[in-house]
Image (tube, rainbow, N blue to C red; front, side):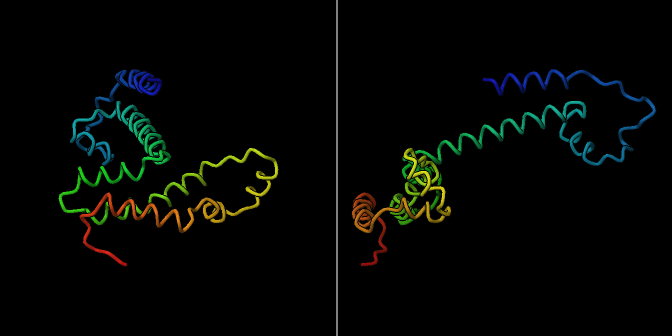
Length: 162
């Protein structure tokens, strides 16, 4: 809502017509970019507002993507996207995404981990990003158990490595 208000304010400030020089012929202008935008029907005086609106839109999109990337349901949402948007069979890709779910959760945990105890904070701050990531990794038992659940959930994939 706040972003929309800012975008409207910017649009209004750029919408005021600027006086044009009658001697200047727009067809002979060396400004190639302005000519390009004019082909698409954009007014040069409003390009700034359009650019700011685009930046606001991209910032909102990035924020939404970051929020989605931190949700535990990320593997399920990726699988659902594969099902809905892929014209080809993606059974094995769905199985793969399901099986790497514990790794995704570990990376999410490593990125969002905020140690509360002083000794934990000291240890955490001395670790490299890779060490932090591996500190959150699931055990082999957890991976095997989750992998078995995934194979039962997505039995259509014919590729098996036993």
